[in-house]
Length: 477
Image (cartoon, rainbow, N blue to C red):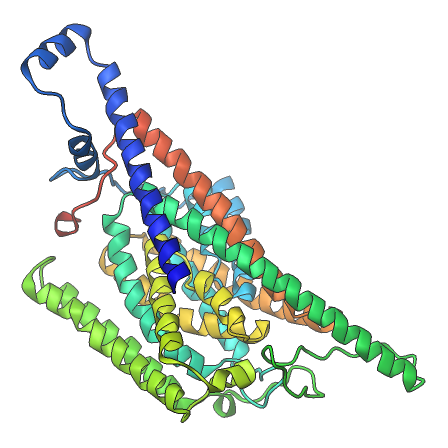
């Protein structure tokens, strides 16, 4: 926890220093372009602005806004063709890694199709929803690779998903209020960290798989059989578990769903949906009733998560997919997991990404097998991304025809990606492929989104555009 606090403090220090530097650069460029005579008169009559005043004026000016949406006409051309191809690849790889693919969707929509950054974020969330629904449908019939349970860990989802949805609501507000340069810095710092962590986890899993394949080959030789070793997945969790002798099993959806946990997740989703509809139709932005409805999301999400956390702490429930490690939780561990759930939601809502960019590496650190980590993260994202789409729709942040088209592309791509990668895992006997796809997708997202953000930031500085916070209460008026 001390290390976590130190890292958090360092990030905020970087943010403050960067804001100060950008404020100074923007101010100095404006001054250099003023006429010399006017400069002399001004400096003789008015006191020079302090550094703090410059920074505050840069970050906030009442009534100012730097956002204006750009929605290109939907016409067949090279933009649509290239955008479709990139979106298809992003959805295929993103769904396999359990991250959604938003880090590829947003640059594609911005640089290729021609949407502004915030509209790209909203359409990206629509694509993530389509890919998540397709992936969940594919996974609902599959069983855990080593244990007699579904491939989706419903107890893990019930612990994280309500916090994820609460974070999504916060992130959508941040998307409206925060300037793009802050979003860019947060994105680069977070994604480089999580991609590096996932990459090393992939190497560790690869080494374990190599050892298991060698041991299996020795057993085959001792038995006098020259047949090729059949793929058997890694034992669950760091402590291991008994392997099943079967390949990925399929059962009916009715048998493979834990309906009580699923019902609680649907309850959270419906509650959030009702609050969002009431907020849109019966309140005005920033009114007292508006904030009351927003705050009602807290007891809904915290209540369900607390119910699951209490059951895990007392031992009445276990996160079975993590093996023995999932049977003994401390209060501090449960709080940290919930905080990361909120963080994943904030990142997803603010950047238009799937919360899997945070949840995926977190689940792997818990000892969840790669297949289960990807399936569970995507399952949780189905609820959160659909809620984001509804919130962005109510905010009128995306054109519906474009959104429907790219949702269809992502839905088909996710199903194809899942099918191909599952076959490759069985063929090569390495579930670590999922982890490497996860790490690669996050890293590519950091480079692409970070690059786009930096280019936009330089453009705004050159054109002396407003780069401070937006006023939520005046948005859309």
